[in-house]
Structures are given as structure tokens and as C-alpha cells.
Length: 258
Ligand SMILES: CC(=O)[C@@H](O)[C@H](O)COP(=O)(O)O
Image (cartoon, rainbow, N blue to C red; front, top):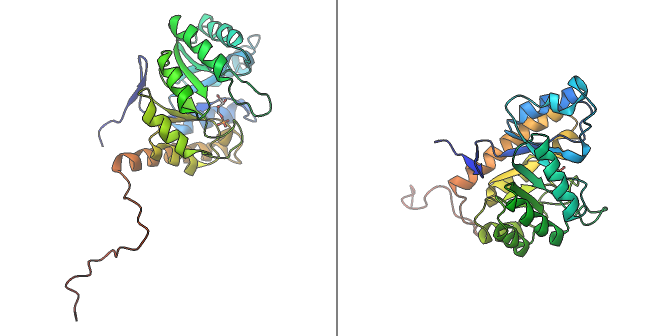
């Protein structure tokens, strides 16, 4: 199969799995899982980075070489906070990409979409390549695209829930509504969820908890890598239409004795 690449702004990728850095039991496990995932993009919460830590004590030093950093604005609850956090990431030399999170509710971690659209518009004007974590609402997705975001990242389910894709139909509508890449972000529980997201037509999947909190994070990272690749191939190959009744696998005409 010819290379099946995709891009975000000026950045080109082949892997369609993006991974996070939170919740690992230790840095060596995180590093091994990130490497096993085959992901090229790894997201890091700017507000959770402990800048006083150096060398092996710093999370950043455990990110495999060559992975692209995607700073995120986790734990921001207003547009202003998210904008300041994104700027801080840029000052720390983390590049132009930003995963924009503006959380509206502590219990569900659902996004505050008004603040999200506001923050996106400002950051796009400042030259960021903005990737907003949003809910599964096609209207918000369109507003984010209109604001100049390079992609939209609707949730599959609440962050860390592992519930899988709660509303695949809305995800499909979002994919039909916007022209920018649609990445499913959050809620994936296992490899079949990732495959399903790709079969629906997602350009990529971003996940953290399902790998970090698996019994064997390295093996789960491999499963997610394979699930994403299988789902993508299945999407490209085109599934058969579903039929209510049987259709025999062997032709019924010309049977001996008929
Ligand atoms: C790491 C990160 O950015 C999370 O906020 C992201 O949304 C992934 O969610 P899961 O942990 O549910 O995969």
C-alpha cells in the first residue's frame, strides 16, 4: 500500500495514533509504551510540567527521540487561562502546535465550547496550529473550523472513562460537516474502540488512559497501534453494505443435482 500520510498545518505524519503522557506508574514504563505505540505525536500538559525538575526527573527527558511534542492546555477553565498556557508552551520552545482544552465542568471534564471557540480564534491569529478538544457537536465543530483550527478533536467519551465511542453517529456527522481533519480524542477503552473510530473515517485517534492504566501498558500500546492501523485499512477498503437477510457465500447456480 502506498504511504498513507496526513498532516496538521505544516506537520506531516504517517502514524494515526497520538498518545498522552499522564497516569503512567513511572517514566520508564511511559517511555516504553510511547515507543511501542509507534505514535509520532505525544501530548504534554503544560500546566503539569514541573520545570524545576531536570535530567531523569523531568518528564520531557523520557519522551522518545523524534516524537513531536503537542503541548496541551489541560486544567484550564477559561479562554484566558488556556491562551496564557498555550503562550507559555511556545515560550518553552514546544513549537506551534497546541491541543486546546477549555474545561467547563470538573466532574465530567466536558469542554466549555463558548470559551473554546473564543480561545481558538485568538490563538489562530497568534500563529498557533490549534487542535481543539471539543464535544461531539457538529455545530461547534463548524465554528472551530471557521475560527481557523487545523483540526477538530471531538471526544469519544469523557476523558479517562474508557467508555469507547458513545455517539458514533454524531462523529460521522462531524466528519461530513468539516473539511479539516477530525481526530477522535478521549474515552477510548480498548483497541476495538480505536479501530471503530478509524472505520468511521477519523483521520487519527488521540488517547492516554487506555494505554497508561492498562495492566500491561506496552502491550496495550501495541494493540492500539494495530487497532488504529486495522481500522484505517478497513475504512480505505470499504465495508460491505449491511443486509438484513443471508446471501450465500457460494453461488447457488449450477449446483450438481439441480
Ligand atoms: C492526554 C489528554 O490530552 C487527554 O486529555 C485526552 O483527552 C485523552 O483522553 P483519554 O485519557 O480518555 O484517552
